Image 1: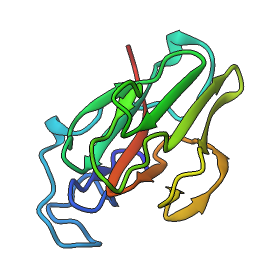
Image 2: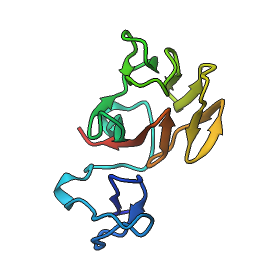
Image 3: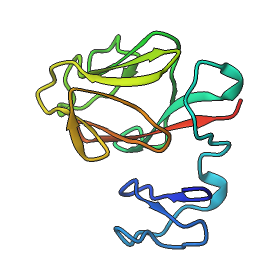
Image 4: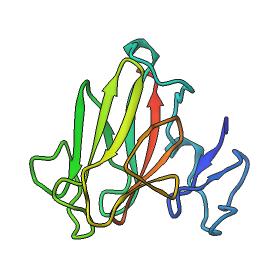
Length: 146
């Protein structure tokens, strides 16, 4: 949704002129604090933008993780590329697999599962605006213009 705001409480989207989240009723953040420069396609061209995961719920809310080439690990293990420190996250919870065709998320046999847009998945491609859930953490996938 172009010009949409993202609720920090539930990760739902709302129209750009909304002041409260239509899903949970929380006040929405100011436009200045929202992700900017979002593009609609995921590609291998770095000029198109940097793929990011933004933590929208969890202890690290507001943290941004740039996704590099190859595989990015997500988990509670301290050497994970994206370290999420909570017992609801498995040590080796999931992986993000980047290729010239885009980015896929793959569950690594986690106990609590990996969810993409509220559906449990084993492996699935990521698209602009997708919501990923790992344990109690919710993350938003975006492309940010460099």
